[in-house]
Image (cartoon, rainbow, N blue to C red; front, side):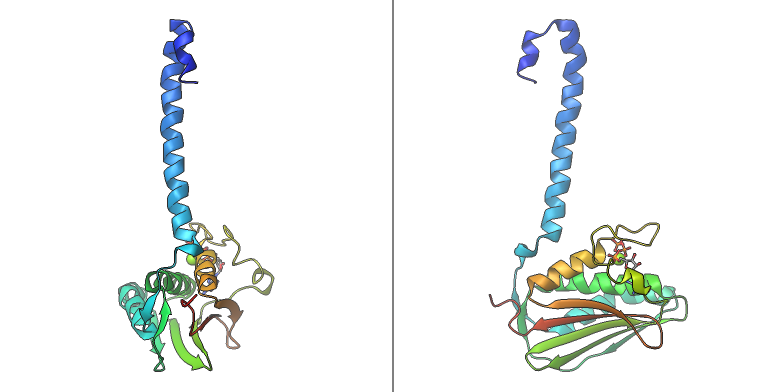
Amino acid sequence: MEEDLGGVPPELRNRLGPRLEIIHGELHRLKTIVERFLRLASPTALDPEQIQLDRIVGQVCELMRPEAESRGVELRVKLETLPEFMADPVRLMQALLNLVINALQAVANGGWIEIRTSRRGEKVWLQVADNGPGIAPEKLGSIFEPYFTTKQEGHGLGLWIAQQIIAAHLGTLEAGNREGGGAVFTVTLPLTAGEK
Ligand SMILES: Nc1ncnc2c1ncn2[C@@H]1O[C@H](COP(=O)(O)OP(=O)(O)OP(=O)(O)O)[C@@H](O)[C@H]1O
Ligand SMILES: [Mg+2]
């Protein structure tokens, strides 16, 4: 359209020119947004290295502890000694952060969040539990869908992204409710996660 603009009467050209420029600029902006989004969500972008899961959990806690404290939420950690394994530490941290942020948003003042790890055969197992309201049974099937949210300010992307990241490591992420109330998210990762 910009190329054809030379052939139209000046009056029309002067009106269309600035509009086309706006379209051009907006297309560029949208392209950047989509590219950034795809990079964020892309499971193919794994950059694996030897990791210690307890260090990643430690970093997540360090990041979240001030916010937890200011909300009067106890952040508990129960870690088993785990072998090192190949995984993408940045992406795993992103996944774990999304789970902990959700837990923090769910529990009320005086609540708690517990992160546990252990080894189950050739798999590493990680759980984030909280004593918030839990997840309504009819919503359990939807929470991993992109854009599913029950929050006014939510995007509904945190769990979807977390699941994409775990799946890219050939692991699983499952949601459930604790018997005593509250939600529990369970991650399993094969010890050969990033070796493909
Ligand atoms: N620990 C939890 N306790 C109760 N409900 C939860 C918990 N974690 C997730 N949910 C439910 O799952 C929904 C989807 O979570 P998800 O992290 O994908 O999106 P979100 O937190 O709403 O928005 P955001 O994109 O900012 O993360 C939440 O809106 C909430 O209803
Ligand atoms: Mg979230």
